[in-house]
Length: 261
Image (cartoon, rainbow, N blue to C red; front, side, top):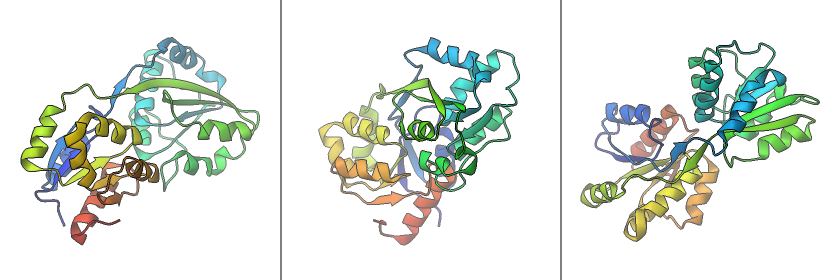
């Protein structure tokens, strides 16, 4: 079943929502976009440059997100050097793998099912990392589970903060006017921070609308955050945060006719 007429609010950052918005439009949906997170340079860009300059000192480079790939690999490419062949590359999900391919990296260790740190840590190549140097390219304030586990396995871990997330600065009034006039059928949220930022930005009236609106989410952590915020709409779980998985979740939910809790 297509998504004809479905009013879908997409909360991805600017620059990362175009593919999903286009896909929704092809399916007949009526997508709206409000960037609930802004992606900015890290507070200490020099620290990132210093790590980029000594990539060859590492055995592994792990990229947590497409943003991390874009920021770190662009800086590496600017050096005009080939990637050191002994430095193996791993990433969390398909989006990061696609971005790495765009930078000419075809051989990547990445989980095939769930796209999270836990799944990456289960992969055999990252089981035996004793006495190895590993750099994790990420956003500021990212989870420590990956690094902590690798250190417990005997690795020496360095974090390289490639970007920072900030609350939206866009004017939310346009979204609120649209929501009041036509309504929103479902909201797509792919990070806990985006959900919390959206909740804060909407204000008292908008929060009441959000509380009753179904959410398509990509992780149990987002589901838990929705509960913490007191949101009472249906929670539709996508298999992961890729465009295809989100669209599939919307199709399934729409076909059922009633939300899947």
